[in-house]
Length: 365
Image (cartoon, rainbow, N blue to C red; front, side, top):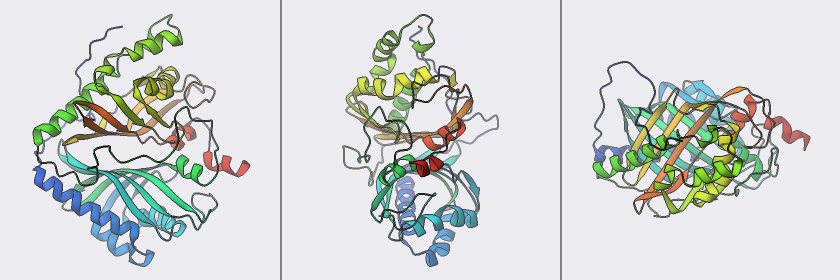
């Protein structure tokens, strides 16, 4: 195995002449505060007040690339009727709790991104799931492209498997990692990061991208290796130079949370690599790559294209179907290394592509 990390462009392929923005950190802080407040209003307002708040937040032709089964929708009316009104009817006392708010510019686009929980009492049916009349924390991760103080394009992943889990169902195979709420960053500044250091932001992003490029080193494709031998190579993989000894990897429901490189390899990375030996992380590339002080974030729609080749990851017999993945990665860089990694993945969307409808399965339980 060649252990040298190659340097290549991980962003979306674009042959046009892009003018790369140099975003003033003070403007970035203003953006984060402004959009955090507007999104909080959207979550907390009544259905009657929703339209006015949406007009303040979204461009009239805004696009929302959402979680399955919302998927891709366009325009304020569709965002309101297909996403927000059903959500608000299900959770009449909805509010937003932000764990992490970061922003920045990637190429010619400006973003504000969030790891949050939409919290409320599950009072009415949502996505075909019966209400519990108990509190639900909807794990919500977003990247919003902004222009002229409005959102022009949103990427929104709500962890629907975790929602179903909290509602008392478990329609899929048991997670290898630990299920439960994602915590805020250990440093305590996730929601109110007031970074003014552009060099620090760049260092964080470069560390993030270098680690990600190392993932293109694939011992699982070497002929004749046992699973134990592949695991050993992943533990001693170039990635080890970037992860903190007390790293936390927060995966979506269905995968779960892992601690330390050993836990990450055992509970996600090794099964994932064995199932998707045939994969390309950057055939399409990231739509976002930003650094913001000690934080960074990347996302792809769809950044991973692969073939479902074994049952190791998620436990389903291989279909050999080509699938895509909706993925974001949020990182905390702490003590010189990557300390925490929040990883929303649209598991329901992946399962749907291999013929498993989790929303139908819950009615068979």
